[in-house]
Length: 138
Image (tube, rainbow, N blue to C red; front, side, top):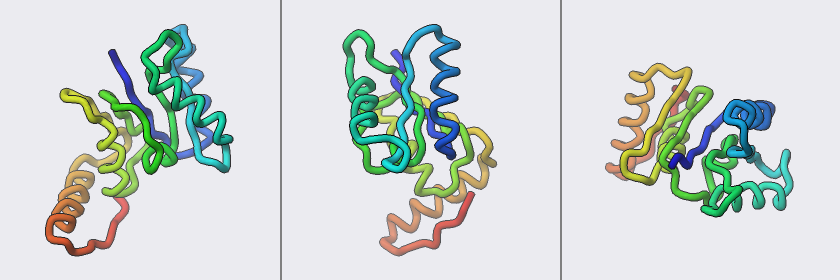
């Protein structure tokens, strides 16, 4: 059973993409989640609660911005889609870190895979050495 997050860059993309997914699959399987500037805590908590649930009516996908990339505790996922480009290695690692199941799949659109791997390697090397690294856009 798929449980995943679709990361988008712009808040304006969240709800239209969630609506397209729901319309295509003919059910309410997806909710949108954004930060405090665009969504109340109650709305965000309700969407996340439905996503964490395994009961009937639970959401199998969340579409969200960086607000769910960092800091918000969401359920373990087996599918991560970075719909827009991943801007930094930190962003990549945080997004990919949501895929906590064995055989999880991660899809990244609009990125050069070589640059992404280089940035990820540089970040991991810096983390292992304990030194900082200047983060570059990828």
